[in-house]
Structures are given as C-alpha cells and as structure tokens.
Image (cartoon, rainbow, N blue to C red):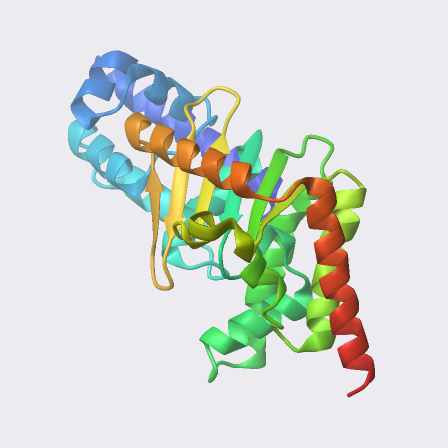
Length: 277
C-alpha cells in the first residue's frame, strides 16, 4: 500500500472511530479512560496523527461493542509481509516522526542499509529462503530509507558501536560500500553520526539496540529489539530513562568529525581488501 493511500486509510479509521464513539455518547476523555489512554490520544487517533497499538484497538472494540472492526482495520493497515509483525508498527511511526535517535551495537540500522548489506543480513538470518523473499525484505528496508530524502525528513541521530564498522557484513566490497554510503549522508548533513570506540570502556558495553522517536503532537516512544522480538515503550518514565541512556552513550562517543574519519578509514581498508581478493 502506498504511503498516501495508507494515510487515507488511517484517516478513515479515525473518522469511523469518532462516529462510533459519538454514537455511544462518549467524549474522547470518557473513551480514553475506558481503554486506558488519555483523551488526547483518542483525539490523535481520530485525526490520524497517531496510530493505536493493537491492544488499544481491541479495547476500543470491546468498549464500543463494534464486533472487532477496529482490530481488523488495524491488522489490515499494519500488516506488511516485508516486516516482522512486531516491527510493522515501528515503520508506521518512523514515517511521522520528527526526530529519530538510534543506538546500533551490532548492525547498521535499517534506515541506513545499502541493498547489498540488507541482503547479506537477511540471508544470514534466513539461510533457506527464496530469492523472492530476500528481494521483498530488501525492498522494504530501502523503502523505509526514503524518509531521509523527503523535504520533511526527521532529524536523524545515530550512535554506532565500533563493532559495527569492523564486521564485514556481505564481504569486504559490501562493507566498503555501506560505510561510504553512511559517510556520504554525513557529509550531506542528512544525519548526525557518532561512533563509540572500544576505548570508551564500560560505555562500549552498554545496552542493546535502542530507537527513540519524537512526534509533532504526541509523546515520544522508545523501541528496543532482540533477535526475535521487539518492544514499543510509551510509558513516560521508561522513555525518559531510555533517553538518559542514549544521552550517556552519545556523550561517550567520538565527535562527528572523528567518527567520519574512522568510518572513512574503515571503508578504505575494506576497499583495499576487496581489490586484492
């Protein structure tokens, strides 16, 4: 589903929610209390500013006695075979975020992956899949990256662990291409990148993958991920703690200038290695 038609579908979701809520004689605040979110959230759902999580859609159905219509619409709009079920909602949030901050301890973030890098990661995790499956996954990651080319692109801050630079995903040539891609985006000031070096000590061993997203008219959200699952977090206290963790990681990283020099040096090392094999 194209971004425009997807947004139109969410707008229909919001209009239907408003109609059903008003038919039930409930205010936004009253419905929010019953489904355990704020009245402001209900207003954002109705205006298609923010998308509800699945459990909220289910509670709306239960409260408004709508026979599962909002759950079915949610599943239809969120469902995208190119993404794991737990990640599809994150993709939707990326599209409306005004600021994205990521910490990547093991692999290049999906928004920055080249086709060769994304292909290698996909095959490594799924060695027996078809070429069509791989192409679908790679296309999904490349489509996600289109937000970085939009005029309204979000501020994008990335902290990479030095491990990420020295893991030759896809081989030396693919690794060189990947790092050159990141360096080019840095030079174009499309994003801000800093590297946490091995010499950062304890900071270099902190935490796992972390993504923070901020929005124009909605509270921030944190997202964490393991190899097999991901968790969206909107509890304000937990999000605040995650933001502090990110600030500590960013403070321990090299400057953007030193990070760019290290990335370019690693890319050159890979290039020389690829040219001799």
